[in-house]
Length: 145
Image: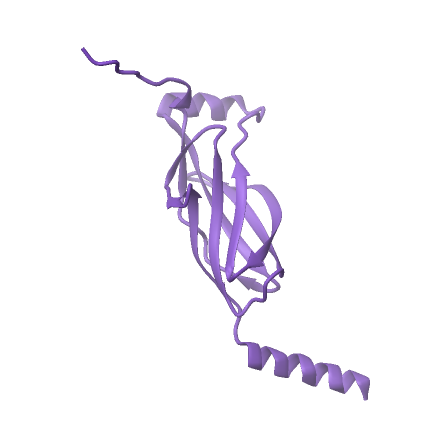
């Protein structure tokens, strides 16, 4: 009897609460959407949700992509707050990948990054791509004439 009650409760709760939706994935810097970032800078991963309660846990997966393959950078956990997901990530380039560093300085950027967010079995579409620029350590300063 208890098993039947639990199954009925779960099915009716899902019908009442609606389909879980994760949408509008963006890379943000100070609340502005960006598509480029410099090495060793922070960025906020952002998404909006529908029908997911506050404090529910979501999994964020960050990927590095190039013309051939996608590479898992990491899996992280965040929580839903007021139908939004925020996660701050710092691109750390202390990876012992000499070929990547050579390509970065030769081409001016690394491969691109994207992220996905998953809640239970709901997986959203990928975020837009983020190009990482290599020339963050040099800058021109103009003092005027």
